[in-house]
Length: 214
Image 1 (cartoon, rainbow, N blue to C red):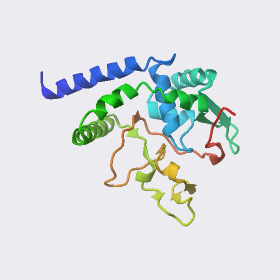
Image 2: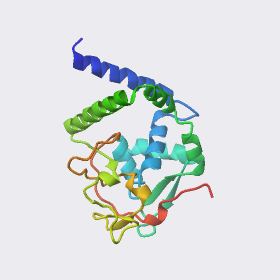
Image 3: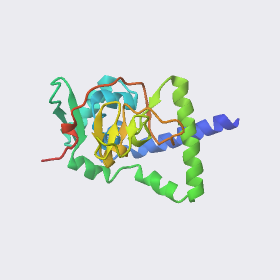
């Protein structure tokens, strides 16, 4: 078998193992993906539109996914104070407790058994493959806020950082979160994000950054 086909077949089989693991705790793979995204996204990116873009699936599928998560008390939505047509999503305390039993843990443990050099080489190769694959489809990935061209570290108007695109102060937690608006800096390191079609800008009310069961 030619080497590229062998690698593609290995990725396919690994993906099947990951998908099988994700039928856990009464959830399906897409439910876990949505929970992980909402837990990692910044306050500008916790909307159904951004989630649809991140997962690269239909609006209808995302709608059904969110309904299932809300019915289990794992996700909550709140209305935007400025735009009553817009809602912000967040993982509840119950959802975070469930994420502590994320089925990806099994694969993380296997990866942890590799040497530091092997992990770095594997990560670099997968990042390169993902970037090329997304470019082939004309899709973008969501990246870390701190790796964005609009990120200003220790800015005078920041908390302590600042987003020059949205004109919003950013916390340390914001800096390490993923963002729908991210435009990578030249030479910035890639991160392990999923595929997503391009998504347009949208205003976000930062008042809805935190979610809890209370």
